[in-house]
Image (cartoon, rainbow, N blue to C red; front, side):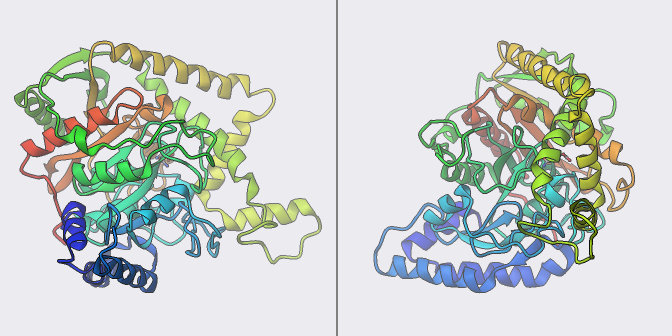
Amino acid sequence: MSCREITKLVTLGQLPAVEVVSSVLERISQVEGMVHAFISIVKGEALKRAKEVDKKVKEGKEVGKLAGVPVAIKDNICTSGIRTTCGSHILENYIPPYNATAIDRLLREDAIIIGKTNMDEFAMGSTTENSYFGPTRNPWDLNKVPGGSSGGSAASVSAGEAVLALGSDTGGSVRCPASFCSVVGLKPTYGLVSRYGLISYANSLEQIGPIAKDVYDCALLLSVINGYDPKDSTSIREERTEYISSLEQTAEGMKIGVFQEFFGKGVDVNVSDIVHKSLKRLESIGTSLVDVSLSKLSYSLPAYYIIAMSEASSNLARYDGVRYGFHSEKEAENWKTYYSDTRQKGFGAEVRRRIILGTYALSAGYFNEYYVKALQLRTLIKREFEKAFEMCDVIVSPTMPVLPFDIGEKIDDPISLYLCDIHTVPANLTGMPSISIPCGFSNGLPVGLQFTAPLFREDLILKLGQAFEDSCEISNPSSNL
Ligand code: GLN
């Protein structure tokens, strides 16, 4: 059942929240051994919350917009009293004393947290293989990666282990797994959703984003979590926006920009075939396609990786074994060796690689060569997008240039993994909202279509997404597990 159906029945008292949660827990017990979407499952707490919701309904009290809906939370979003590991050994036993703002907003609407999902360590990766807790598997083909870094969140929704999920997107981590698992995932405009309680990887790029089976549920979840938060200094001072009404508007007459560069070399023919069919479908629902150009696309990856790694090297300096988290037991001669030993053992290889590269890019002598240049490119890319949006309302592209690949296939080749982010990172560099929507299958594997809009125009990508979904037979897909 979709979130929309569940809340309706729970609110009317026709379906107890306890029954919803029990059935999801039952599903988890059937498939979790194969999928491994979760790091922690909070069974007792979830059933307790469900009982409270049912009690409210019985007493005739008003219940929230997500009453009784089981939600899975990426394990880098702080949940009070529930272990939050970031997929890392260094935070393996960290129990936050507070909730992220997005979590408080979910709970206020009577959502039910079902568990914390697996992820690439500190959200660094595109496959969920960089987790201290082992990889998650793609529910559509258990030998394939589910995408990442929010792979556990997307896989849990796709496999029916949760109805909604939250992920975080720094360079595509909500949209990539949404594409690989055939669900809907949205990266909001930077500043729309509070980052308070989101454990930082690269703070100038990332946003918490909704993952759901269809566009309606995605819009509903975004409507709940967005809005100003005084606890986040980058949060935009705007009232909360409601996105459901935009879904009812027609997409007819919309102008869709196609960056030719997004269909160039490096894009798997199986993916581009399906995406080209989707472009035809977009025309058939009354939109028109316009060619636009992004000459600096090839610079977006180097710019992204330099900025992300630089910010990561600074943000992760706090894990020193003194304040919290794992610390080395080894007798150390001095502070430096203690610190190094803790970080050597506490972080995985990819995280260490990025800290070292980021520290290098920020060091005196190289700062202007790398970091400052990357910031300049970021501005130029943003300008190109702004110029493109003078000609069109929304830009379309494949979400991922390739189909989900085998677990282990690219793990030893970080550069080829970084290249997979080519279509998703521009939205993080520019701060613009971007959504991935299922658009078909190739060889039984999901393909996602990405729409990007100007800042704060989530309404445009949601209404176009809804119109596109309505025109497909594959709306509300569910894995065949
Ligand atoms: N794959 C990208 C990276 O490894 C994006 C990660 C993310 O969005 N958190 O940095």
